[in-house]
Length: 189
Image 1: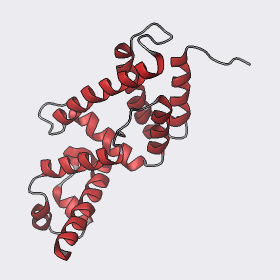
Image 2 (image 1 turned 135 degrees about the vertical axis):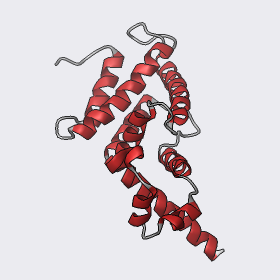
Image 3 (image 1 turned 90 degrees about the horizontal axis):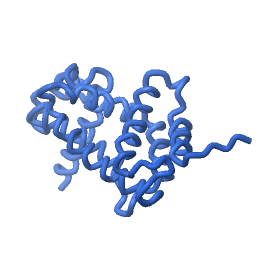
Image 4 (image 1 turned 135 degrees about the horizontal axis):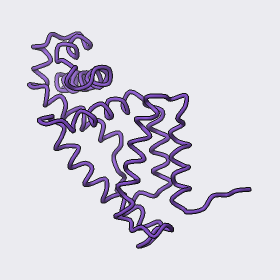
């Protein structure tokens, strides 16, 4: 039992190190050797826990999904704003996700299918959020399905802008401004 706990603890340590290395270098620039060195293992020792770089990538993505797990109940727009607040407190995770997302659009990238499937699911989830908030039409006249990709684009695009210039882009405030835009009215007092 103790050996299994140590193995799971070591795997978690490796995943955290991989998150850091990917955030710094991107997936293609991250080597198993660099991850192994960060946790004090040989590359062969790391391969005992993750037999391939792709297997390690899957573990990194699964770990990230655990942090951002969608609750069993339906999301609400105010909860999305809380998620943006939470992301602003963990730039390393956001940087890793953004690096992997950017690289995944290239041919043959091992995370391409993950992100393709993820965006299909996230767009459907955002359409459900928008429908719960506004019904079949937003104040602008768009359907939830038309607005969902825009909502996702704003969330992910704000992450990139914030990572590039955190002093100029207040990600949580900008997202709340977008929610105000969705409402279709601005308090001009």
